[in-house]
Image (tube, helix red, strand yellow):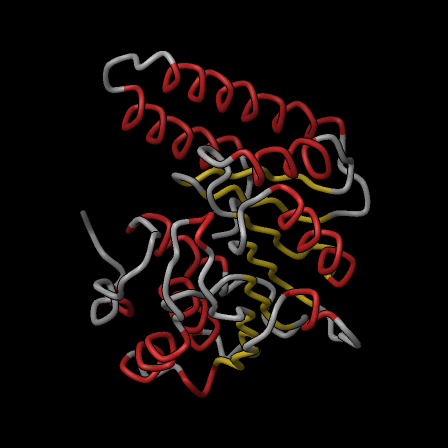
Length: 241
């Protein structure tokens, strides 16, 4: 598989992102340069932060505001404080100049926030109430044409439920693209009938993929991921790349 040359020295940064997800965040961070900052909710060890920082740096873009209290979340399987490792990984990847760490909760960081956001990446506490709070606090700052991306939207109930209740049912988001466990959408004033049909097709395929996984059909995971990637690439005119 061909890798992105600009990421060759950071592919091994620890974290939960797959290689495809890591590369996809890098590409998303290059979109809408000059129209706002990038906000990341949930940094942990910094794998996603580095992908976003490398992407925005490649186009001379704005800062990545990396929000995370870096405290243990036993319910999510995180038992250690992560700030020290996070900062060390940023330094090793030479992206400190492009990242503004905000060691606090999403709710604390939102107080007084008034900067436009061109990309919002939500990958913090995956429990429903926490994901809903992150979305409600930060989505109003996302510009029209901006990108909202969320992680663990296939396997975690919290992100999945927020997607259905606030994004998939809304006329304000279109261009649905799915890469492994990332779902990305574009915020618009109102999506067109054609966009609705295209998005329905992606959602239908997504439903088949999830059902096949639950039924443990052989090869459903790799084949489903490949199909979702190929279909969203072909029927979307942009796919944010």
